[in-house]
Length: 155
Image (tube, rainbow, N blue to C red; front, side):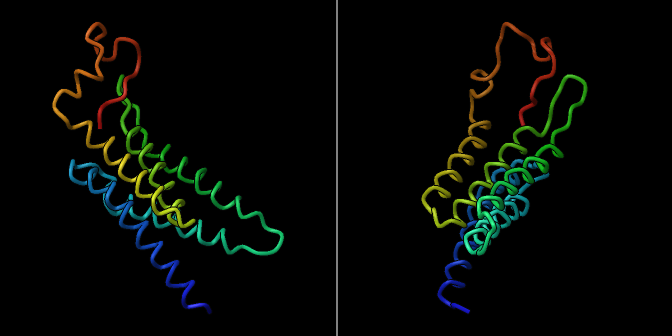
């Protein structure tokens, strides 16, 4: 056992948890079901899969594991999307869970700057929704909501 390598992996997992939890904090703060724990868990899981894929030896393709993370998070995201009459809920949660998995993968591969940047961008996208005037930027005043089929409800 290489203790230096194990410590490096542990630091990466803690960093992924912190960055994922940071994104989840915004969701928690605004009362969404998926919050700090969910986002931190997604980032940690993706990070650990990235760490595992870097240490796969033999005839295995190390790129298969990260591809599986992307697919698995896609299925998780599909489970949070709900359509009720003319509204679609859960799109933002699904998209940000998927993006948070990329944070975990980036940190798992040692790309701390990329993981931090993506975490900040996703947090900013979530926080922008609550800025004054956001509705004026995102709504088309000529078309009432729901007139042209289902609309994404702001989460």
